[in-house]
Figure 1: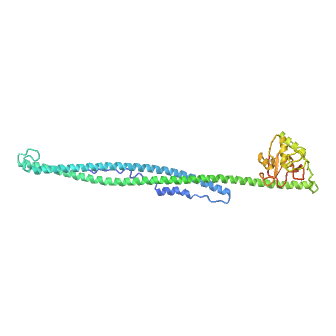
Figure 2 (figure 1 turned 90 degrees about the vertical axis):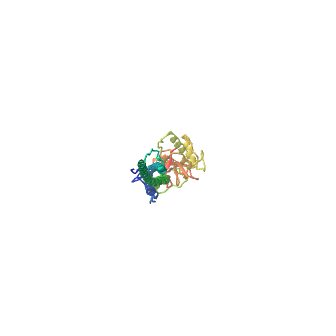
Figure 3 (figure 1 turned 60 degrees about the horizontal axis):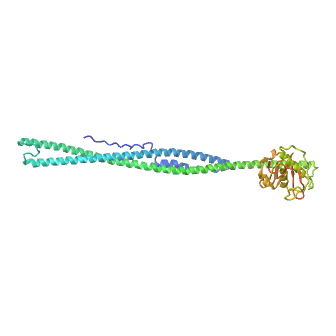
Length: 388
């Protein structure tokens, strides 16, 4: 009988394509070493963070592709385990069948030998009518030939049994290898997912840093522009003050009753602004009164509040509130009717005046002085006014 062959299907499923756990995790972990070095400026830090985010996104995508490969390997390993189980069951069934045939042949041989032995003194040991010794001898030879055939079959079945047992052992090994690969692929997939989750968290943090750095850069830019504008305004104020001193023969009046020089009527951009300016002009010469809102005297924000009330705009009594309440206007873009402020910054300013054009405002300056015309170009002029 020819030897029965049992194929080891699945034994080569992982050749070439199999990604070991060590390689998978080594590649996945490579991204955890990404770090954005601190730069010498926010711009350098921002560039580093953007590069880090790009690298993280690429690594997360690579790990997603790697997880797909691991999923495929896991499914292939599962199929190999199932295939090995099926072949083991078939081999075990073959072994059981071969052993049953051996037992049957052995029983037949034992029965035939017993009948021949018992038939030595019988006229019919094999159930055949024997009329002479010659015929009996022929029958004995027939029994021997049959026994020889049975013995050969038993030997062949024994060989088959041995083959099937070896093949079963091989299949058990194939199954164990497939099961190991299945476990490895599943463990590697879980580890890649865990690392990817950490990298996604790092990416979210990095993107948050990018937003913060961009905001800081923009804030710094605006602060630098404001400082430059402030310096320009202060220089212009110094020039204006020097020119005023020259026009007055080198002397600046310190008389608190001085109400300044009216620059003349400059068209206002709206009827509301025109009404506010007209009201302020009518108050020139009235004394400064702390917290005053007229009509006998004013403080600085009381004057601007009452002036713009005539123009139909309501505002709080307080220069800081007036700065915060309206749209901001750069000093070069001022129009008659706008409010101008003085101090270290808009939110913390300490004085307000009503701009009437030509670099001039009407203000209620301080205790002991009077509502007057005055240049806006002082050293503490804030770089933005407000437009009610």
